[in-house]
Image 1: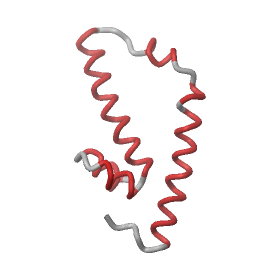
Image 2: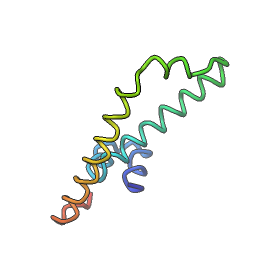
Image 3: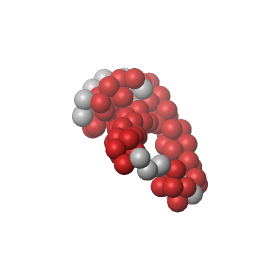
Image 4: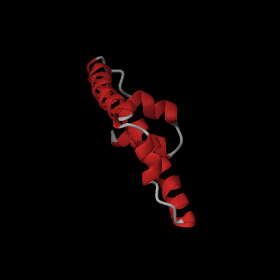
Length: 85
């Protein structure tokens, strides 16, 4: 997952998603948190209102499903020897 996160940080999202899809998603979430934090710092507005509008089932269930599928993908590409980018 660290390799995927590093690819994501460098902007190579295709390689990041291929190596480990969840690492790519976490890299994108970190980028969004950076910009959301900057917005909160500049405006002084809390972000809790934005997050409370979206019910948890719309982002927690897909994240847990993606995490499980990402590890299954990683095991598949590792066992078949196609895990290098």
